[in-house]
Length: 162
Ligand SMILES: CC(C)(COP(=O)(O)OP(=O)(O)OC[C@H]1O[C@@H](n2cnc3c(N)ncnc32)[C@H](O)[C@@H]1OP(=O)(O)O)[C@@H](O)C(=O)NCCC(=O)NCCS
Image (cartoon, rainbow, N blue to C red; front, side, top):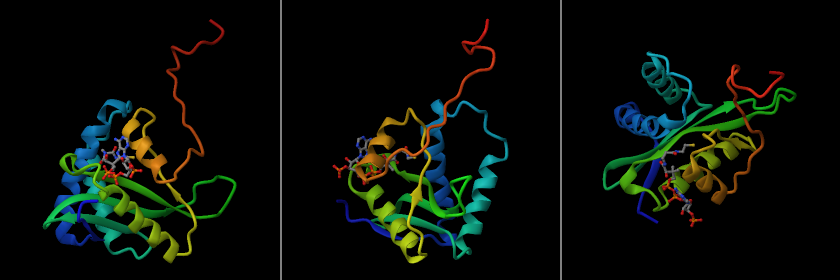
């Protein structure tokens, strides 16, 4: 385990968090399929900035020797359409490429899990691309398991009536 300090992000960290978000975005690009909105990056920045002052949300950063090397964002959602039970959605989880496999990701998720428990929220949900095999293994190792699967087809290429 790398000697990483995990702490809540401040406004001064937003540029570093956005650098990591861009790294995540590049990593996910081959699987995105839907073209991103042109204002996506500005929207993400605003949602991080809002989360910093929202007591129901938490943006964490992980620091190693004064450098920000990872981030994770937890915010409340209601995942089931048949239930009002809340969960914390964990999004924007990324560790910079040179710092992976040293326990930083686990430490970030640990921080969000503690936050969920402190809020009296018993479940954490994540979304990941089905082809992000490294991330799938990471989530499995931490004890996550699939609840729903989103499948996609192209309307003019489905195997239908002909
Ligand atoms: C996924 C990610 C956040 C994991 O962070 P990390 O700091 O490398 O993870 P940790 O070192 O805490 O690993 C925790 C466990 O997961 C395993 N793991 C992590 N990445 C893995 C990978 N790519 N393949 C297989 N196992 C992996 C570790 O070996 C460790 O297992 P163990 O302790 O049970 O042996 C990081 O690889 C990353 O930023 N990836 C690119 C962005 C991304 O895909 N984010 C997730 C979007 S949903």
